[in-house]
Image (cartoon, rainbow, N blue to C red):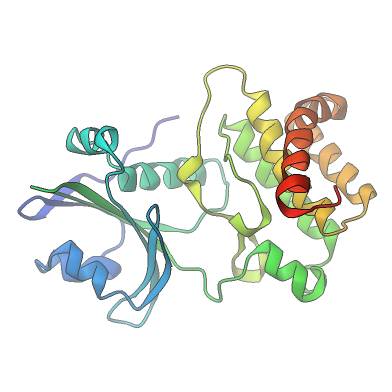
Length: 267
């Protein structure tokens, strides 16, 4: 699958933007340095050695999610200097998933900067307000406000089927990485670990499903609902449920063992 990115625009020395929506990057278009633009963000969401994500408010008061990527070692630095930026990759992935009707936050732009220190990039997309993920929704009312387990699992089965039908593997399908959009729609986030294997795809599909089911069983979702989820996914993929369970089981067993050892899980 190929998508066409908007052509990169040079907005200041060493700074380029792949632009879909102008609102969150108006300051950059006016010549502001990306570092200052990011520093002016409205709220810090997560900051660590690996991730720096913030909310940015545009001139009309709308909030946008911005994630900064800095080179992590020589390989990332070399790839970025060769034009392979992680922020641009996130923009491309978002557009590809949207083509598959996989719900993701609406992408707005990718910004890249090359300077003496190497290269940085930023990915900008719609902020989901209020921000609430599947785990938080379960802890609030066990999804009663979303129509119950059956309604949420029907959405999940469709999302998995579309994602995997396009050949993609998410890589970390825990409940906190599924956000809730308008009207309770599931929205897939945290795409950094996404891959598209050329061969042996079913083990990856199984890992995605297994990680989701680990959360389901830890929170006490009835087994009948889990069975229906797998059957629904299998029907949409055009395979037998037994084929899906064969893909799930190896990864599920490894994850369950890890959760018992690390978190004291009762799985």
